[in-house]
Image (cartoon, rainbow, N blue to C red):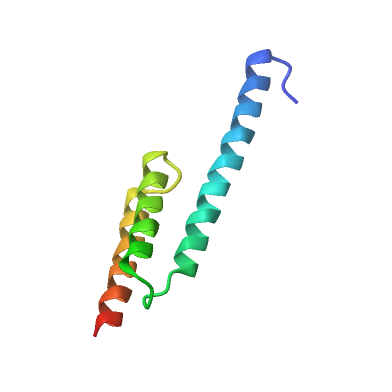
Length: 81
């Protein structure tokens, strides 16, 4: 354990941020897994929005969000055929 107050505070902050980031990642994974192409395009926009918000808050990388959205679009296009 750190002896300096500032270090103790940074440890507390890191723990809070890690917990928040984990919840955001878990929610995103659940949305992606629960997405079905047979469902409306509204569910795709929900997943895309969640991915964009995760990028905005720095939880995931921009390219990962783009990859998720591209896969969703591919599934939607295949379902329309």
